[in-house]
Length: 99
Image 1 (tube, rainbow, N blue to C red):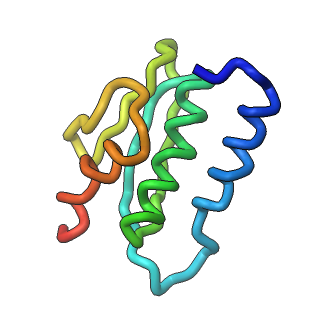
Image 2: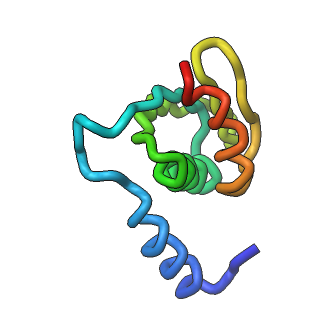
Image 3: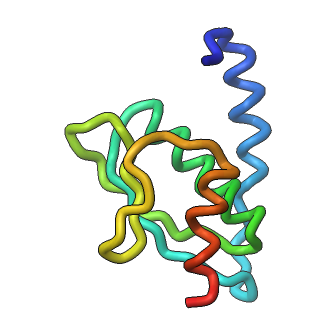
């Protein structure tokens, strides 16, 4: 885990490039997330990075709850209930691209 604040800032700066500009021609994937705190903020960024890698824009509906662990779902299906890395998110999201 990164504990150096400057390393975290560099990571956040790098991940900020993962957000697509609003472009109607880019397909949109609607994703829901519950959670709060730093893990949920990191999951938000990682979801957008995974979406960019897959060529889709993530439309994230984020609802804060009492639990800190982020829980990500599409429709009624829970994809993951803890913080995971971008490559795992890509694998979890890929089956939903054809829908």
